[in-house]
Image (tube, rainbow, N blue to C red; front, side, top):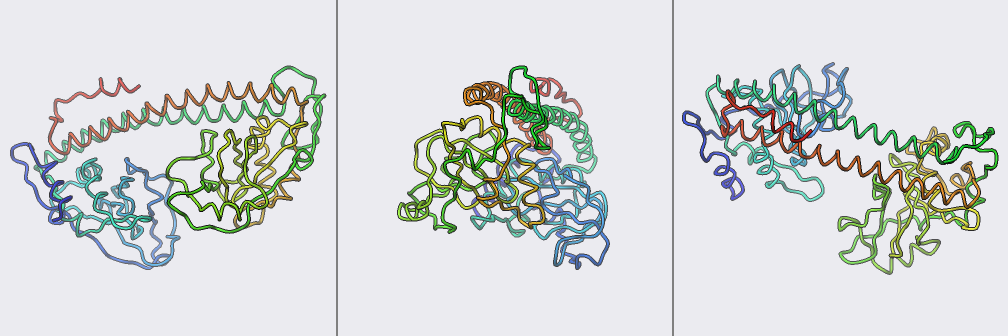
Length: 438
């Protein structure tokens, strides 16, 4: 066993209750490697994408025949599936039915362990951390069974295992219900934000007589507003040369659609791609972003995101985005960043990409977008008002997100304490801890 494995062996085997034994995992479970050609069995299929991190809950119903290509591993009820790709995601699922799963999931069949206890043990933070520390491959880090199987498993009596599993079943249901309530609240806040933005950019923030906009998805707009094509309000709508430059260690930020963050900003963290200055100068021959430009995502799953450039730093965005540079004598960039980021404009973006396998809007298509146009002073007023309202909603969402993080930490700590015997599950009452996170 390597140093990581040895340290893991020490870390959660120290101070275990009397009567518990320690076995290498490979002696407490059996690795199942029965392969079946997909599409011929009629069995439901589970991929990594179907397993929720940390809880093992199936994210969506898995019905019908397997849809992935190639061979899959067969599992049966009470087998435990463990994700070996990016193990830090903690994708562990206890099967309730017969089925097939991705080769990225190890199928473990309990020998000395109750399957529910095994499921919780594999979710233990310390176990996940040890497995993650053993991975190989930078882009697609995987763990291997040789390492995982040699990690220590704690083996109480079967009665104790079942008592621990009963306790965790009961307490994690309470915690998971609390998590769902908080997550639903975050969803409602996001829904409210979208609604507030959509109403402000089509109706304004003051009462006004309305008229038909002439655009189905905008509905009525104030009588003193007009509608126009985005291109007529723009100084330029353009993108970089269609190349994918090499990354360098020190250079100019090169963002893609995924760097248009959900908090309304652009991602300039250490994790972004950097390109050489010579590539920057060559690729930006047509246009390079500057303050008050709008970065608009036109490609794939990120279609329809818009972010305002609010700094003077040098950077480029890939072909997945375009730069919208408005005529500031007729168009306020802040107002139009909210408008272009709204579900209303996304409706037109989707209509213009129907029938395209991977949605991809050309510059000329974006220029044809129909947009409502308030007077310039009113655009600025709406933009400032939305800044205030959206900021307040996002702060509320951030506060709830912090609460969600604390609840998840509580859940993980409770599992670790129970499966290592650090708490007596027959007498422990965690309700007060849960209440602190509400």
